[in-house]
Amino acid sequence: MLCFGHNIGVLVAGRLLQGISAAIVWTVGLALLVDTVGQKEIGQVMGFVSIAMSVAILVAPLLGGVVYARAGYYGVYYMAFALIVLDIILRMVMIEKKVAERWTKDGESIGGPNPSQEEKVPPPSQRKDSWLSPLDAVLHMTLSKKLAKRWTTENGPRPEPSSPSEDLPMSASGAPPTIPRAKRISPLSNPETIVEEPESRTSSTALQTCPVRPDSPFALSPAEKPRRNAVIVLLSSRRLLSALYCALVQSALLAAWDAVLPLRVSHLFNWQSLGAGLIFLPLVLPSFVAPLIGAFADKYGSRLPTAIGFLLATPFLISLRIVVGGGKEQVIILCVLLALLGIALTIVMTPLLAEITYILDAKEKHHPGLFGEKGAYAQAYGLFNCAFAGGMLVGPLWAGSVVDKAGWGTMCLSLGILSAVSAVPAFLFTNGWIGKRNKEHADEG
Image 1 (cartoon, rainbow, N blue to C red):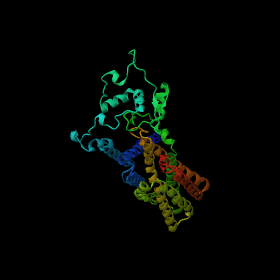
Image 2: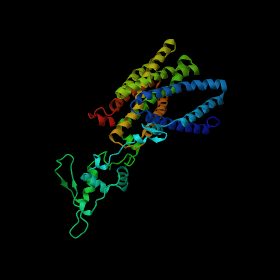
Image 3: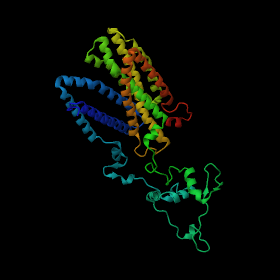
Image 4: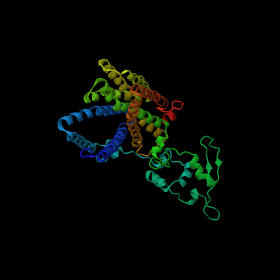
């Protein structure tokens, strides 16, 4: 549509579809990356993602300009079509982690598991949990047939009593015995202290007040546990909301210059399109230190680099107000300030990418099975992508409108104040609420 469209409606529709496809690829790609790498080294890996994104932003306009000059309008799209075909081929040959694990488990090969290395399951009489507590007996009577069937499949059928009198005494009249009132044992009280409860309340009270051991045969698997909507659960986390806000601000601070910087250098230094494109080099090149920042976040957490990055960006943003005249000295000052600003924003971006993974892992740690067997990485990074795209929209609108109404200096000052204010939630909520003494609950956010 973009290649062959000749009216504004087709071009707008093409750009809309292009944005949707980019959002899907970005979100699924990050989720797949997290699923493959895990939490331990995700910060450092996200640093390489940041490098790839920055290089693409830098190289794409240069390649487009060169190809357009040499091969014309359609030559640019031929290059894009070639990249799409390459991307499809790479996706077809890619092996996901869940598929690869089928062939990489110890003792397994293409022919299947080695019988000599199969796990030997002891008989029920030798298992530590072969006895049934009163709570287990209540659960056995009230849980679904599906769980009872699963127990039979995993541990074999339960032995049947040889005669009814061995387990349940018959009444004098020969009628079936009556079930006595159930007894509830408090795990914190004396084992000999037994509290009787009415029969009608036994099942509901036991299920609501007595937790089931994770190793109990009646414990629910992650797939069987009732799940809440993942997006609602994520948005209820202050820690995630803070990360999304910081991502929006970081994106806005980076994208704001797209609307005003080329016009500024053209006005001050009389630069043409080439110079207006190269002025973004100092802002993008510092992203090559992102893996080091990510490794720091993996080891010490995301709180300090995120807050420090916003604080470092504040004086550099405000100092850009002094670039008001022409000459080589002003060019040098502008490039140095942009490079320092790029370093500060890189310090913010990489830990934020890893923070999304840290949040999900903390929630799964304290609430196993909360997001089901497949997790919620795609939903979480989808929200992150929405916040980042929102910043890409807000940043240029903010900078352009302020420059038009109040001038370059006021625009730089406003961005500096925004960066300083954003350091507050970054420090308070990144890695969990700083005010909580219990680190586990603080990490959960």
